[in-house]
Picture 1: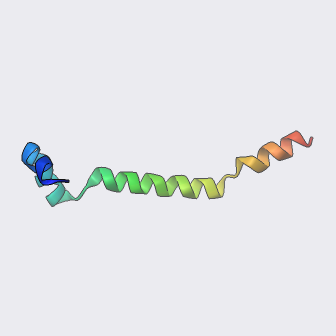
Picture 2: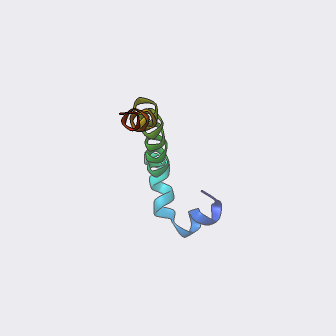
Picture 3: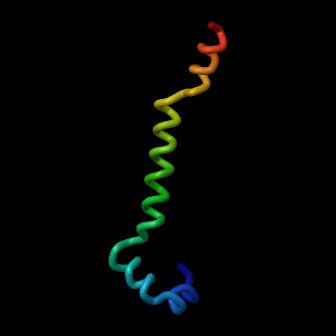
Length: 53
């Protein structure tokens, strides 16, 4: 958050200082879950198997 943002949203800046940057943490966890799901579920092989039947 830039200094301009802090002056425009002091309540948000205070919450980020107290609680951490929750939206950034949620984004990080969501990206991690998507990567793990992509490794666990490979839809490419399911299509190949179905096409060979």
